[in-house]
Length: 222
Image (cartoon, rainbow, N blue to C red):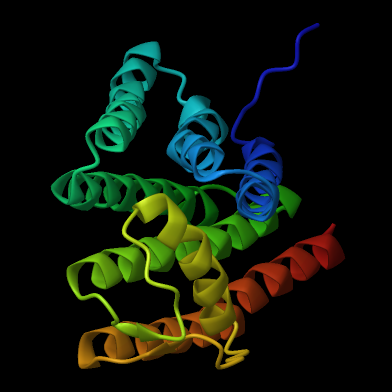
């Protein structure tokens, strides 16, 4: 019998998808050319489409959902060929909207459906990873709009070269590690940095702790 992904196990798939996505971005940046980095990052939305949006039972909803990531990939390759800064703004904005929509869908499944189980706890972890990616896109947009908005960052003119740097910086900020190798230099970037640190701390302290606690209570009752 074929195994179909459902809302009982979809966050297992999403966890692996996000980890592979982050690992793939790092490997592409470390070992390959900018063209490979562009390919890697412009196709990441397909992974999220399959892992999160693919649980929809209504095929018409799934077909409508597929339009958005396809538009992102087409825009990504168009801007790569045309080399337009305006296209970078549009592409990052589309990716930001898609990642926010994916995080919202993930949050709804984690917070408002059924009992807490292992899949829901994985979903909370996935939501945390999605938050890091969302902020990385915001930082990339800020840096493109306001060059030198961040200190100690090599000036890059392409979004696919900026994004891996800000993925690293975003997760360092989200976890409040604060290594200090990249720092915000203007008021707008500072605002988003400290807001991310606050959100990250509250998320860990409240949401994940409550999910794990509910899971332990459910086990004790059984």
